[in-house]
Image (cartoon, rainbow, N blue to C red; front, side, top):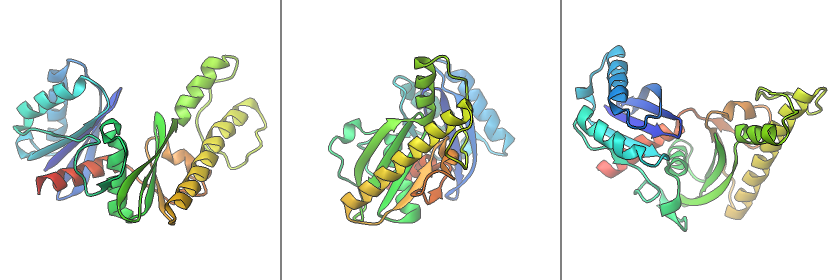
Amino acid sequence: MLLVADIGNTKILIGLFVDDQLITTLRIPTWRGQTAAAAAEITRWLQQIGHTCDEISGVAVSCVTPGVIDQFQEMASALFSCRPLVVTGETPTPLRMSYGTPKTLGADRLLNCVAAAEAYGAPVIVVDLGTATTIDCVSPQREFLGGAIAPGVGTALQALSQAAPGLPAVELVGLKHVIGRNTTECMQIGLINYAAAAIDTLARQMQAEMHATATVVATGGLAHIMRDSSKEIQFYEDHLLLKGLRLVYNFNRN
């Protein structure tokens, strides 16, 4: 069995693969120096789903939080008796690298594209809707080209609330109409449809630049809110990054 982990600034998403199938996931807070508590929680989780730490034969991890990855490696080495594969922008993957500065490339962007190219073929464009909105391309020749980074929808809402404190707190939900009849609706339409229009425009421009028609796939915690707003997004994928971790782990093991 393979255990994979995506370590973010506030949450760690852990997945368990059995025979190349993602069977379950766990979310825990990102620890800082609390590895014993995290190890205990992971052990309990495995026991609850009928498995033990001894059954884990491999671990792969991506991390955007400085300092935490060393703690995770130490914990995983002790808990599972195997050294985790830490995926970075410079880790070999099934995609060829055509990004100018892979050392600065977030592993999440690369992993999303690895998984999307495996599932949908190339060319493919991946839209990851989280704290940031990233839009990345894989060429028809299966090259990771790069893409664009913009503020996430939730991040834009926070910035708007801080800059204009008189505006109400709103829930990020997609609406079927585009003329808001009250301030809450106006904010929801402005935030979501503005982001969807930007995504659609960039997706079309990227396809034109690649001289190819690409499949457009969305992932990330806020992907569901674009379902009725984006015209270019064709598929929605949960846990694309975790699936990419499995593929890159297998690629580097063989």
